[in-house]
Length: 220
Ligand code: DX5
Ligand code: ZN
Image: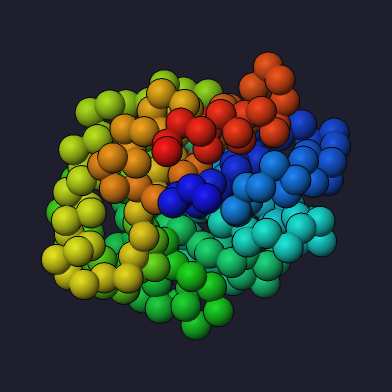
């Protein structure tokens, strides 16, 4: 049994057969489905609306981990909560009233995550870490799957871990971007226990199960 949770990002799934792909993820033993919502403004890509989340909800009982890469997330939070999200994570760069945003998410019955871009310092979390269920440290600049891991983010993961511990926060630490067999041990050593991956799972030459197994085996 691994001591991390694996969150498969369907951004790299084959949407011609989404249900089959999700069943393969379940059989391979992933822990959560990660849904990347991009608005074409905060990030240079446009992806999944609440309809995809409600469709996934009908396909699987796995928790739906929704990553909102959108400007003004407050107006969209109710849409995704209603669609069946288990957790809603917002980019701290988009939230001038972050406490209100997290309260809003909790009041709709979801867990609340706070996301930091690679260029955003850990100190931005200081006032809010005790109100979050999860801190997501981006290890690429968000917008696309298949980008290269940024090793310069590693010290920040350890800083976030210290911040969480020192503030007695319940928050778990997630990473997202460029995670594969080589980079997973590095983020794990720095303190991440929720691991998002798209390419390493969906583009593994031997298929989804082999991709999941390779990630599982990279940390003993
Ligand atoms: C990046 C997204 C990620 C992406 C990860 O903007 O937030 O969740 O799907 O893809 P890989 O694992 O290929 O870097
Ligand atoms: Zn993501």
